[in-house]
Length: 252
Ligand code: BTN
Image (cartoon, rainbow, N blue to C red):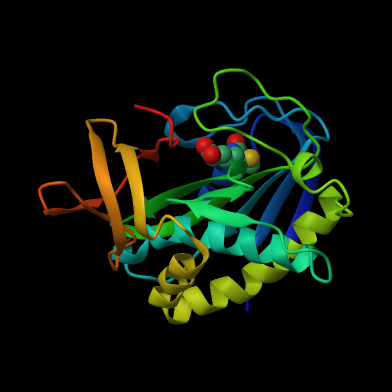
């Protein structure tokens, strides 16, 4: 069972960076760092995650799953599934939120990015030593820095009547994480299945993906067992994409 030890910070460079240091120094699974502000918040591909005080949830959790290395990419999917479950839990009894997951782990609300996830792993002797699951959820932002790759939003902008607090969202997230992580360590493929149910990007979506090397354009065909997104190219060939950014519909 996963139990959490939570530490709060008024300000910190990055909860992920701090938690990686703690993990390397032997911290226990379940250590969770939550900050009101990050001065050097990090996103995927060395991007900056702008983290103004009190505007978002900036949270990192230390996990030490005993899973095969080939199942590691699934931990990115696990984070997104957990966030979607948490936001559904928060909106119970109200009109359903229109949530989606853009591969691999951006959570969208009304088609705009409301949450980003950065998972970072540490290895020792060829085995996974730790996994830091870092989650940034936009809570109260009304404006965003220019130049973001995908249109951003916040819970406040999309669901102004939802009683959102940093505490309520972090509580819902950690409660769902306990469940989803429990499933993941027993049956990693179950998380892949749930991801496919929650994401409109899983099957039949026309996408363009920037892999960093080239653009893959085609129609999605579900996930491979390791979490790679299968894309049917115009030639009919199916290409597994293991990393990259799905571009917004109007791009290219
Ligand atoms: C992305 O979409 O590029 C991922 C963003 C992840 C941001 C979170 S905020 C908490 C944790 N600490 C960080 O420095 N980054 C992650």
